[in-house]
Amino acid sequence: MKPVDPPWSALTERPRSSVAAATIATLAVIAVLWWGQRFMIPVVAGVLLAMLLLPAVGALARLLRSQAAAAALSLVLTLALLGAAVGAFGGQLLRMAERVPEMISLAAYRVAEMEPASNTLFSRARNALRELDRAANRAMGAAPPAANTAPRPTRTRPAPAAAASSAEAAASSPALSDRATAALQETAVSGSGVVLEFVADLVIIFFTAFFVLAGGRRLRLRVVDLWGHRPATRRRVEIGMLECAQQVRRYVVVLMITNVLTGVAIWIAFAAAGLPDAGSWGVTAGVLHMVPYLGMALMTGLAGAEAFLAHGTWTAMFGMAAFVVVLSTVLGMLVTAWLQGRAAKMNPAAVFIGLVFWGALWGVWGLFLGPVLVALLKTVAGHTRCGMRLAHLLKG
Image (cartoon, rainbow, N blue to C red; front, side, top):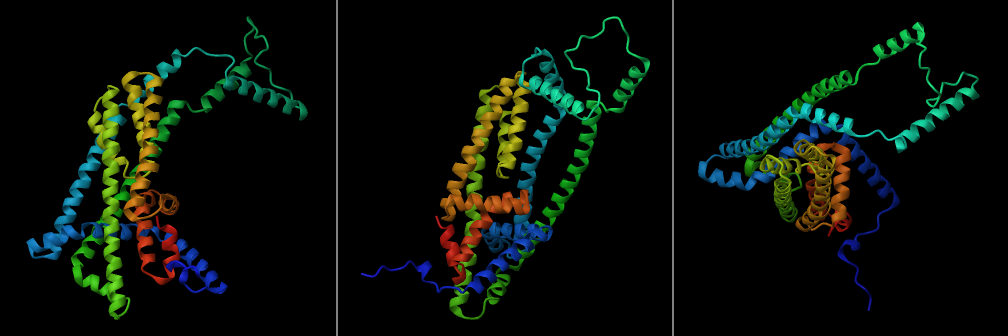
């Protein structure tokens, strides 16, 4: 009996020229996505937000008898929820920033308590580099610098010229505190620019979502009209749009589940370790977990600093940081990838590779939007004949 090929492989064989053209078109699309990210990121995020709020806007529109009023009310409530989350995270971050001088003083005290060791890895590496420097000077005919092991004179005083040169070198090299202050000032300036850029993107996102939601069914029908007037084609496009909206809502549900799990785990760990503000730290961890990997990396540093301030030991700091790393690894790479793969009917490898791709393309926004964009790509590819192979590749 002749074997039956699966539906995805029943497509006709493409000529080599078509494969080359598809490759060039794909590279061109990637280049456009990278070049136009300042425009495309807020627009894409606004459309995704509109897909997420579409059921709520529909229910409010039936009560208010106005699509625009329902869209505005939904976005205001969403903005209030986002403001509450950012306020909780920002307040905790501000309290931690106020305790940075205390942490620096405690770290300096602990470092000063450590007994100097003469046979450590760093000391041996430093001596080896000095030996290499002396050998290079001998090879170049220069006078080798004096070794550290040479006996120092006890009663002779350094020459005035040597003392002046050493004093000038010490004066010319900036102190560690000055360098740290300059670095903090540069970080504050760059951070304010990032905040302003984020606020501008947020304004565009909400305005885009408002106009998409205010358009209602008329805008949706105009989008369907772009694909022709055949009933079968229009029906397929409408089904694809509904599935895309469902994928966005499934992604948000998975994100909320993992955020709650992360917040509860951090809350329990901080309470068990006797750290202050355990509940606030749980909320902060849930907010930071919205940005895959990067958010939990920041949470690792904050948790280690809080444990160091509370207990004053390096063991507590590294222990809490290790716990957050293990937690983020388990939730990010196992639970989140598995849940998103189950929700979108995709294999976890496709979710992870897509996350890496969008993160490299759009940075932090790509890490946040990457999983849902991969799910939407799989949905759109499944409803087009030319994308059946890609949909089969992404299928779980």
